Picture 1 (cartoon, rainbow, N blue to C red):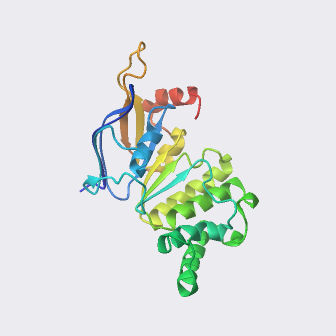
Picture 2 (spheres, rainbow, N blue to C red; picture 1 turned 180 degrees about the horizontal axis):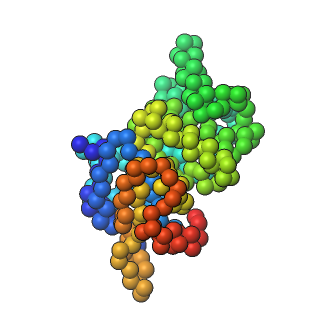
Picture 3 (cartoon, rainbow, N blue to C red; picture 1 turned 180 degrees about the vertical axis):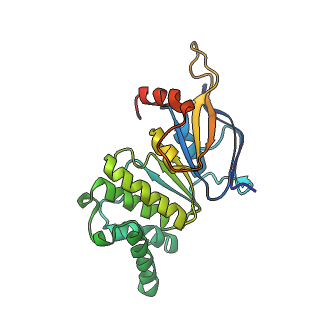
Length: 261
């Protein structure tokens, strides 16, 4: 059975149709990258996978069952804006998810249990290259370091699915390349299923095992919100390269001409 299935999935807000007729299956361990023009529903689909949004019609299934309508431990997410706690150190930022998991009321652990969680957090921070910064606060970190911290936060609860919403969009090209290697390493080591939104088609083609292109198949200039986007391309990727196939040239031009949001 596929891990994720969408069956005739629609998402609307009032009279505005955002997504329509999505029919997809994703197996465990795949790395799905999603591209398309601004406002075409990529992040909306990601939010439905997380449980922040619910389908207007159709089904979105996890292991054959309706996806829970709120985030849980099985699904971790990293946003473009760094989702870290400014008043906590790097180590505390990663430990806190485990602390609230074990102690929902206090958010504090003691004794052997605290040492166990601390060791787990330190090992994870070492794997993302932050073992030298355990006692630093977020304002003392670079953009790349903050994003490494956000990834460690997402992974500490051992999710099966990692959702990435343009996680590297604010980073410089050199740091971005380092983050590409990091996320590929973590994907393999933690045996994750990854869904990643990006505006960079080359990035999507390089990182993913499948690349989805979101676009509208139907348009009405008199009623631009009458129709939603669907997945117009579902491309299997057999090797890691940033050389795009010729059929994606027009898509690249459309994405690059759109204002980024």
